[in-house]
Length: 396
Image (tube, rainbow, N blue to C red):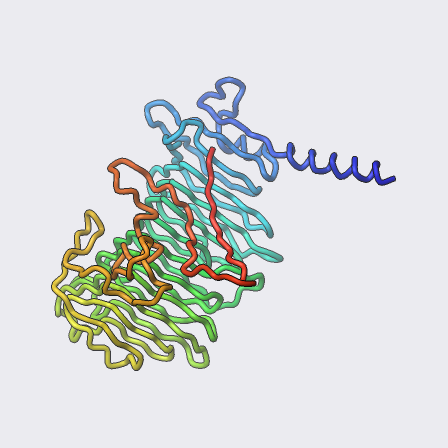
């Protein structure tokens, strides 16, 4: 009896290992492949991978895609993107995971999740792609996006790392019925919006905004999770005289919602004054700890009760290299939690701390970001406490 059960277990494992298949898409169905991405989606099963050969002459696949299964999409040719002229719509379903690699959207067509998910969560991963708008601003949905170039992102939860985009909006005042166990993380992005670069108006998750470079936009936090602990650390935030703002970070929350926002080691750059007195950070209804930041203009913050070691300095931004000129090294928070990856004291700005841009943007010209997600331990614990390291990546 034991042998029979063991055989059944082995057979089940083998079946699960071989169940996923690769489906190929090539122009005109060459080599017995599918001629359209839609046809491959129709033929695929959950867990399959669709491998798409870019068309010669950079011609696009002209079709609108509806993805109603858990599938992965990759290019057949390394370092070459397949081009799609059309929309991509993911149909939500509990446990559905869609991963899109190496895509280039032609035009302004959006990638979106079509509605709320019930009974679980939908996850959309977009990696190393060129996109237009991405809209996953629906309940119980996670967007993970890394190494991409694109336009505005609307979402309710996820991890956005190492992208060049126009803006990020996380806007939901309702509570997820099937919440994720992960925080919202916005790390090492170059954001180009005039006005609001990052807007968070949500009550579901702790958030971490780390090492972003917002050249002409501000950060607004309009709602926080009750009793949450949040971070805005090592960012470069520039409010210009065209962004209609007289601060870099605005934090508020509805009555009855309490939380903590740590605002450390940031660079606040202001071009003005056009709209009145510049306060780097303003806050109401939320406790903010504002320490070790630097500004080119002023560090006066009358609405902040917990602050210190904020300084002014003669600095300038280089929006081509995403660097700050004039920063003094090793002048950020002395806490071990915020040490640079070379184990020195923390630098201010987007190249400081363990989530430095060096993780996501290689310095060699022509290299592409290879880190889709990196979570480095800030302290190593000994004794009975276990240290967990988390990482993710994808290779064709």
